[in-house]
Image (cartoon, rainbow, N blue to C red):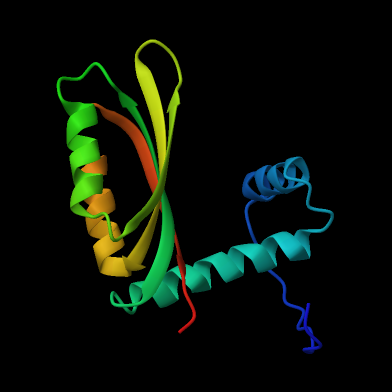
Length: 139
């Protein structure tokens, strides 16, 4: 942490919410509540800064779990990647079982472009779960 002056503040929350938060941060290996709250604040601020500027250059990971037996789904997902070969930097493909595959794509470009690519893939019939995580790049 930098040499900035620390500020103390109090937060009032419901007992159940506090206990669940406490249990989760301990399970994740946090040794103190303050660091967990700082991480949440940083994540929130990073996300808000990105929302303010769709042209911001980002790198992201798109994680997809899909049923590869859905007709032509694998081909359509691959076609989107080829259509955006400048933005799709890398792909990892894993066979989870006889029906399901996991793909993780690394995508780089403007926030708007990365979100459009993710949206095309996440909205396809047969995609069971997906998540896009982006991080802004310094200019």
